[in-house]
Length: 114
Image 1 (cartoon, rainbow, N blue to C red):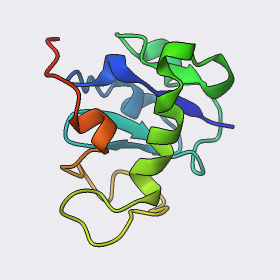
Image 2 (image 1 turned 90 degrees about the horizontal axis):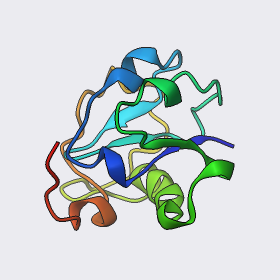
Image 3 (image 1 turned 90 degrees about the vertical axis):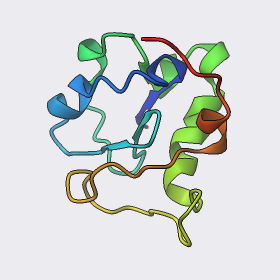
Image 4 (image 1 turned 180 degrees about the vertical axis):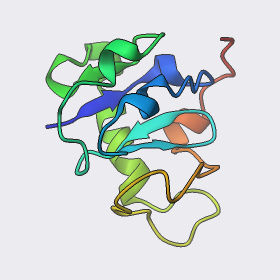
């Protein structure tokens, strides 16, 4: 099980969750943040600090955001635009920095104000 970041994060990128994550499993795309499902230890530290309530434990993900569970995993499992290979499990977001690309689901969202 893991936590999932959904639509409310798109174009917000607050990063308070990144600062709270003890295992560095929250990665930055171009327009959203993504939690690595295999690196997340289910501690829940990220959820209460999210100012837009975009983070959910996967079993508590609202029906309207269900597609974001697979989308968070897709960010790591499939090549992103401009990359030849998937990210896989890099073992920490800090050493990679911002990725500069998003999944098609996030990239296809209309721009959102903060």
